[in-house]
Amino acid sequence: MIEWIVQHILEQYNYWISIVLMLIGFYAMIAKENLLKKLIGLSIFQTAIFLFYVSLSDVGTGWGLRFGTAPIVWEHGIHEGYMYVNPLPHVLMLTGIVVAAATLAVALALVVRLYEEYGTIEEEEIMEMEMDLERGT
Amino acid sequence: MLPIEQFPVLVVAISLLSAITILLAGVINKKSCFFISLATITFQFILSIFILRHVLTVGTIHYWLGGWRPPWGIEYVVDTLNAYVLIIILFLSLLAAIYSKRSVEHEIEARKLPTFYTLFQILVTGLAGVVVTGDMFNLYVFLEIASLAGYALIAAAGGRALRASYNYLILGALGVCFFLLGIGFLYSVTGTLNMADLRILLPALYGNKAVQAAFVFFFIGLGIKSAFFPLHTWQPDAYTYAPSAISVIISTAMAKASIYALIRVIFSVFTVDFITLFPIFDIISWVAAIAMIFGSILAIAQFDLKRMLAYSSIANIGYIMLGVGLSTSTTLGLTPALMHILNHALMKGCLFMAACAFIYKADLRDIRDLVGLARKMPYTCFAFLLAALSMIGFPPSVGFVTKLYLILAALDAGKYIFVAVIFFSTLLMIVYFWHVIEIMYIRTEEKGEKEISVTEVPMSMFIPGLVLAFLCFIVGIIWLIGTPLPIMDAINSGLGLGVVVP
Image (cartoon, rainbow over all chains, first blue to last red; front, top):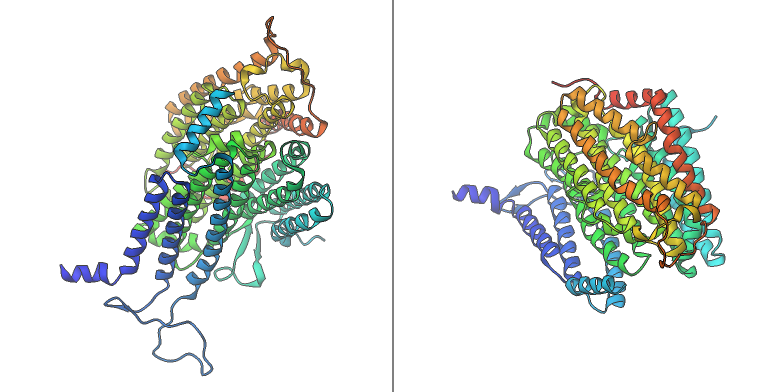
């Protein structure tokens, strides 16, 4: 039992944290009424995916410790006995972070415009106002 | 001799450069923005014709970005399927651009024109990129480029469009995140992002849980983006409240690009061999059948013309997905689905153009206000009539061809229930389109009712609609003659379809 916990939870704690974060973000996106809180949820969800990708690149685990080092070719060539992490997921996630930042920027701009239009960022209240507008016209 | 091998990257690069040029040119002259955008999209469209011709005569185009060889570098691959969808997307973008000239001047403040056309061009860049790329991560980036431009453009209308755009953003971002997660799963087991490479490496891993989870993530992610029932909840609001030209482009080009991405992932990354391991396509067929009925019933219940068309789109995405779902069990393969990608783009583009023309002239959103409009706006109403007839399936229109081929596919697969579903959904379509046509053409104003004075919209707004309306019938006849069927066969054989899988 303890062996199982060590193998599947402690040694892979970064994946577990990623899953927990993903679910927290997902919950916030669905359950929260406040438009900004939904965006915070989206942001947490995206960050969890980044963590997942970065975890993929890691090598050499034991008791939750990581031994891989930065994949840089040194002056004297590659050192014997070192393990190198995979650089590709990191590069992908740099693009991912840019995309996430752009999404967040567009979303925040939308929330600002919604606030200007309706004077609130609570979804319920905005929907009620829209209903009133519908009845008025 | 033209360097046609370079054209796939040119379609994307020129478009991106043009987007920046528009922003700069807008500082000097706001009028020039539209013309730069129009010229770029025209040029892209001409390039896409050359690409299709080259693909059909010579073969698949491979372009290595920066000269890096495929498994490591990003590769653009254009085969018959890409070239076919690329032409559809750029043609519809071109018509939407022409249509946008007057409608945008009417709907958007003059000082915002440069940013509007910059975003429009970025949207076209993203859509073209989704179609030409042969790399999973690149596909994700282009999807996001197109989506982000799309959110901003929908919100450009202000008012109700803002919340529609926000909802679309939350769901769209979630969908693309799922797609990214799926890529991560595939990368973790194969270590590659190239589609062709994945296709080779995956068969050994079909039993792997990560690969199966990746498929589900891809399907849900792209299903949200293409508004496949029951993941369509963002769609009616977004289509209804977006600016006119944007309604046209997102309901045609953008929806088709997402469907293309879905088909590409299902058939090129995962293969028919993977799909037939599970009853995925039975589920897709049934959900598509529900979408066809559900979309049509809700369309009948609408009073807002654009919202009615939006729900009709959900039903039509169902038609395409039914074509996909039946593809492995019939000799026709993907032909009905691919046909409907073109056919639905033509019909829905025309219908949205007409619906937005009514809003442009007199802010007529409600179907009940369209009384006797055929006499006042004859060209627009005629375009609407032709496209609506086509939607209903009047021979020899494109709608008829789709239904015919879908019925043939369902009969061939021995799934007769879907024939009944197609007939039933056609009946429902007749109900809601006939309702509009009757009000427009036959009903006259009752006494005491205030007569609305409207005239025909400007030429740049009804010509694209009429072109699409006539194409609905011309393309229908071309399909029936069978000239483009070799293209379909080439696509089917390229994806390993067209033979009955037991």
